[in-house]
Image (cartoon, rainbow, N blue to C red; front, side, top):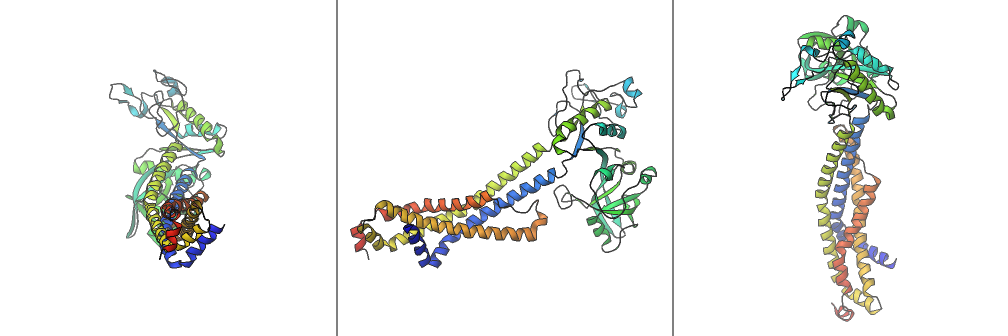
Length: 447
């Protein structure tokens, strides 16, 4: 305890010199903590973005039964292309209103080996509707997408993401309607040229003017604005840095005027996220059976591997940048070692007196190590406080441009203080060793 008092007393007797010595430690700790907090915040934001709509399970077609790139393999296959989920083909498929694999899209493609490649099936909404009979699925929707320029008078937005949705979309997907109405059954049956705009796009085109019932040009045709909605992906990476906004219209209308398939995306709603994998696999198998495909299959989209890889990349970037910022801790440690060497020189007579009174070499060594460690711990605490202040400013003024606000975890906070103390010990060993080796008689003679 006496050594701690000596350390604090020595630091307080040279306040300015001690503070200037701690500057390197303060900057180093603050830099590392801020960078780690930004990295953790980015990871949390990415995870939230990927998992916030986890109950919406996307099903897509794969030409290969064993592919495991972005999906989960949902059924065994054999050399004949048949197996679980293989479904029907030929006349049996035609009797049920399905195209046989050899007739899908009118023809089949030929691969590089000269073998006939099965064309992707043209999905029927009636097949997707059958999936709601599976226990655990309480709804579905299908959609298609395209990009176009939307203009109103002299204002225009380029690269607008237009999503065509079916009639079940608004009953399944949580869409926050700010004003106006959603799409109605008559919009689909009459192929009405109506569109819903997201709030950002509406603001860009109309400013303070009421956008409802206004006529905008979408590509080469005019559409009436019937609703304004809040896009949940606005401001995130999914929105796209170059996106001009988003709009919704009937998928049948989008297909007829933009030349896309009526169904490009298939999504089933699984309220219990614990059942996503099992229920999703069953739904994909059922859709494979209904489509009658033999070589390919439907699979559920697997975000786990993508999320893991993304977080790994973010972690590596954070570690590399944090290590670069940590160089300032090395500089700060050298400053501590320098000032402690000066302190040993200034206090040579004091050291000699303590040794003459019975202080052992070990006690002198511990005294100066503690003094060095206290200096860096105080610097670490100040740096940690500075990091909290910087992160608060980032959260206040730049949160919109980040995936997630900076997060200072307890482990990072405690680790920064422990590391500061470790720096003090490492760079305090040389001065402390020099002090402990002083000859008491020569030290007492020192002027």
